[in-house]
Length: 314
Image (cartoon, rainbow, N blue to C red; front, side, top):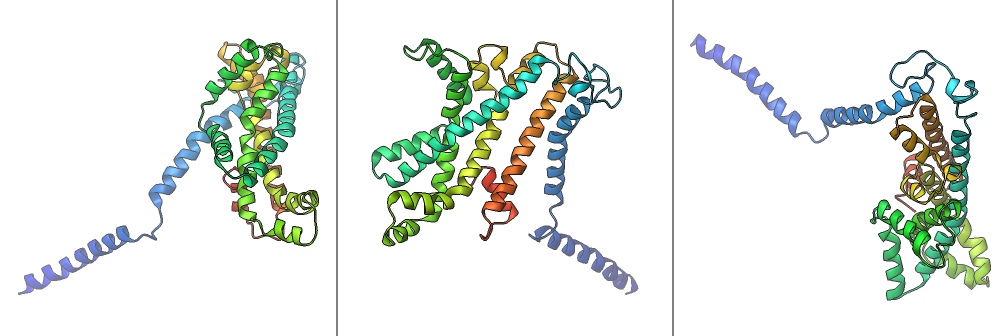
């Protein structure tokens, strides 16, 4: 009798533990330990090499594998090989900024015009143009770059342009014009037709409606697309590598790859890559702050601003 009672009292806690464990596993609101651990593992795996590359840009010695102390030698301390005094690395920085600025100034207005035209044009042809815009996100950049290379080297009328800055800008504009077109078009769909109709009812011309009504409403989307284009050109490699003609019009991405791949790398390349990374961070930060500033009074939180700057929303 006593043994039966003891077995029952022992089995009851075991059954209760199993039941609570089952309830914990079936609870959809439990803490996602596995997903959180996998996320941290991915962040460490992806960010640790970048942190090491940045760290070795401040290396006092010439090694990319042995850290020999903290120094700014490869930024401006070395009078020969630092990125400030090395003419090749120095010109690569300004070439990257020049290509980014020119591409943004040309691609964004063209993309906005495309978005406005496609949004107002109905039929099979505008649908085809819209498909072509989206197609650029699917076509591999290598295929596009090779096609542009043959255009500027083989096609009559355009081969006179040749490779160089003009070819690079035209190729980058053609590749990036889809960003403002898609983002602004999404913004137009969100806005609707009511503002234009109300402006027309009040007697505004199409030009006045565009200048006083539509452009202020489209400004956040235009700004977000400009940030995306500018930051995208900073780290573009394939197009500029195929369309550059010499070292004077070679941007940072090509310099870093060609020098490191050729076995002539050093901490100066790490410093150049750090500057390139800093440019992207600065542009993204300015884009986030500018988008929040332009959308004051609207129900836009920080996560929505990041989504817009990332290109997922108009």
